[in-house]
Image 1 (spheres, helix red, strand yellow):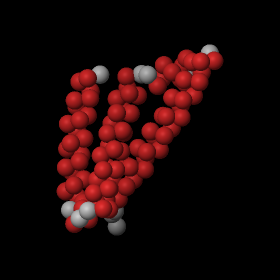
Image 2 (cartoon, rainbow, N blue to C red):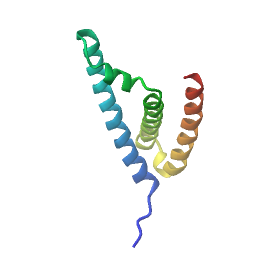
Image 3 (tube, rainbow, N blue to C red):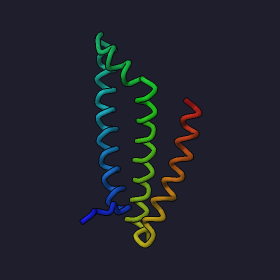
Image 4 (cartoon, rainbow, N blue to C red):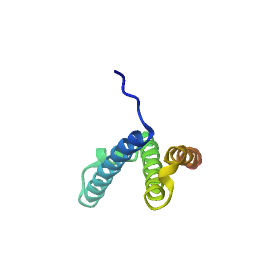
Length: 105
C-alpha cells in the first residue's frame, strides 16, 4: 500500500517544519546578538549571515507567511471548498515574491 501525499497534510507538515526552523533561527540570532555585545560567537554570527542561510530563511518565511494567510482564509471564509486551489495560488505568489527577494539580495 502506497501513501499518497495530500495537499492539506503536506501544507500542514511544511507549516510546522518552517515555523520550527524560523523559531530556531530567531533564538540563534538573539544568541548571536548577545555574543556581539559581550564578545564571542563570531562563528555563529558568520553562519547566520551566510548567503545560503539567508536564502533558505527567506524561502521558509515566505512559505510560512503565505500558508498562514491561506489557513486564515480557509478557517474564516469559504476556503474549505477550494483549499487545494488556494494552496497552489499562494505557492505561485510565494514563488514570485521569492524570485523578487532573491534579486534584491
